[in-house]
Structure formats: structure tokens, C-alpha cells
Length: 310
Image 1 (tube, rainbow, N blue to C red):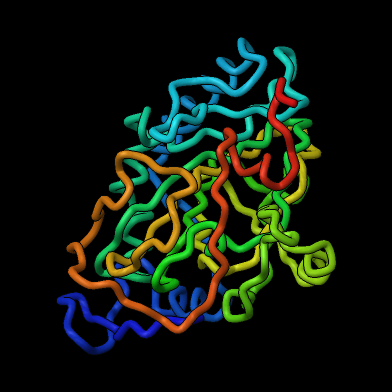
Image 2 (image 1 turned 180 degrees about the horizontal axis):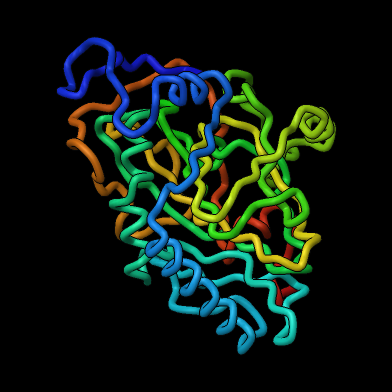
């Protein structure tokens, strides 16, 4: 992991910074493995509201045959479904920046215990980048091919955390997240096939990663805090239970984007903890610049068409 940032104490001065919510052991595990899982990351009330809203969106999707909804600020549909979507068996798979249209999702994104945990890992100054819901309805074909998030959202440094809040219990049967521990300390893999940005590693590299992967499971309300360079993917939902993840991306305040946000929104760059930075912290790291999707979701970049589209 490349980070030249000095360790800070709670006053922002040099020295050993002590965690607030996370233990020293959890911070050390994150540094070593590139991820940690923490249960009860939000309150039961917060979780219930998020689940209710997502259930309402799934029901609403039955009335549509293709991507729909109030567009994001770059003009893309808010909601995206897989090609297998029908009114009888919905396959809503993505909600883009739900915090833009939901007070409940905004509250969790901006002022839950999750943000404090992120501050323990990369703080004290934390900035919001974007958020989304990745949903796998029962029987949905949605898969996530192996990739590293940093290749989609490169910054001047890699103090970037993806927080994946489990809206449902995650199991291997319903397509839980799969990760390769320690891969954040390894190379950046190309997400290009020749000149084409395909959003996934090559099949050979994916086979090697799958051989090393472990499942990320846990009860609803748990969060997986994942380093932006950790290699990860997931398989389709083979169960009768839904699998929803509320995914929020946070950065250190002095991490400056090197490419356009793949999911721009009005809250991009909002300081959630601490203070804004007057400088960009640079690290010695090469990363390809992505070609951002113009479709409803990145699933199409990985070759998984949306419902009712060519």
C-alpha cells in the first residue's frame, strides 16, 4: 500500500494516532489484509429505513422494462436492471447515488458510525466521493468480475476506502463479496482489453485471484471497509434471499481525483469529518486512467447488458 501520509493524533499533530471506534487491532488488520468487517455499523432504525426504501424501489422497478428514474447529474438513469428483469421477477441491480434522492441514505452516508470508522483508517479529514446500491435479487444473473476500485477512481494517493454496508445477510449462496487478502499491497491490474476499457481483469488473472479468494459474509447491518486497491468480485445470487449492498466511497481530504467521477453527484467532495485540505498529497504510483461509463451502470462495461437495451 502506498501512503506517504504521516500518522496523526486526534489533534492532527504528528505522532501515533489512536483510533476512535475501531481498535488498534482492527486498524492493523486493515493495513495487513486490505479490509475489515464490523458488525452493527448502523443502528437498527437506520438499517430498517434503508431496507424499506430499497424494497420500495424493487417494487417500483416492476413497472419498468429498462433503466429509469430521475437522472443523475450526468444524465444517466438512477435505476438499472439486468436483462432478466420482469415484472414477476424483478432484477433491480443498481441505484446510482441514492443519497441524492433519499434522506435515509444521505444520513448513513454522511453521519453514521461508518464515517467515524473511515476516519480511524484514513482520517482525521474525510471527504465523500460517491455512493451506490448494488442489489442482487433472487435469481438475478448479476455478477461482479474481478477488479480494483482504484482503477475506476484513481486519486493522487490511495487513502480511499470503499464502505460496503450489508443491507441483507451476506452468504456465499446469495453472491457475497469475494476478496483476495493482501492484494492491495500488490500490483495494479489492467482493466483494459487492448484499447477497450472492460472494467475487469483478464481471465487468466481472474483465475489466479479466484484461487486465493475468501468470502465476506455477515449479518445485515455489518460493514466491510475495503481498501481501494483490494482485488474483489462476486458471483450471481443462487438463493431465494436478496443481497443488497449500500456502497459508499470516501477519501482523505488531500486525495485529489485524477479522473472524472464515474458517478458524479452534488455531494462529491463534501467534507464529512475534519477539514478540507489546501494541498494534494502525492504518492509514487502508476495507474491507468479509466474510460467512464455512459450507460446506467458499470455492469454494462463488464459486458452485462441492461434490461430492454441492445
